[in-house]
Length: 149
Image (cartoon, helix red, strand yellow):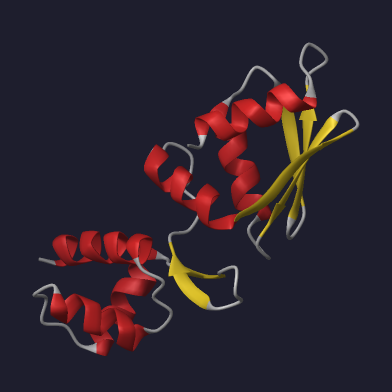
């Protein structure tokens, strides 16, 4: 039952902007799971959920960056939830993310092992993607976007 409930939590936070434990309890109860706030609190901790800000500044739960070898679905979710912009600048691709998410996105890009990308340097909300000499920043950005659709 625990794994089914946690799978449902993953699904719910991907589908809805859920920002509080009580909102998550309500959604789970509506889905037929008889849970308390204490149970949800333990699940949040076990799933290592993080809080991110949406475009309006509202905080909501999200899955953390997927560790090496984890599912591409988690990578896609992290990328889509955190990406704000991507542009070419000189020989680099500059990516802006939600605050605190740049390292997670850089790790996702590194796991893609794209021919156009030499590597990434990430701060809090900005990533510099070094482009290989055989590619252009535009082709690298295009390759990143295509793999993350």
